[in-house]
Image 1 (cartoon, rainbow, N blue to C red):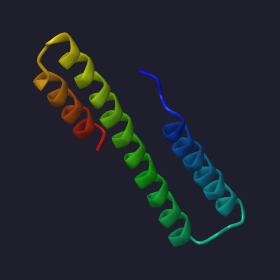
Image 2 (image 1 turned 90 degrees about the vertical axis):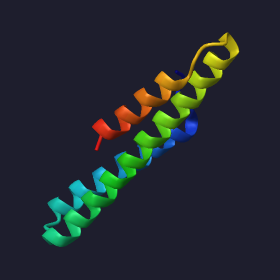
Image 3 (image 1 turned 90 degrees about the horizontal axis):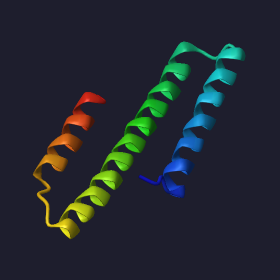
Length: 86
């Protein structure tokens, strides 16, 4: 699968969030603020994973349809992947 620019940009923003959290720690920011930013980064990672899985699923389903193959297993695998990632 080829990862598109949107997905890469999401990850770059997450990288910026993590760097910001490290800076907050170095500045001695309070626990509540740091944990809040960590939660935001975790949510962004969850969204990025969902985008990657759904994009890959769409690509695989299109390929299988073109080949005349079944798609049920692909959907099952994608759901299992999302469940495992939680």
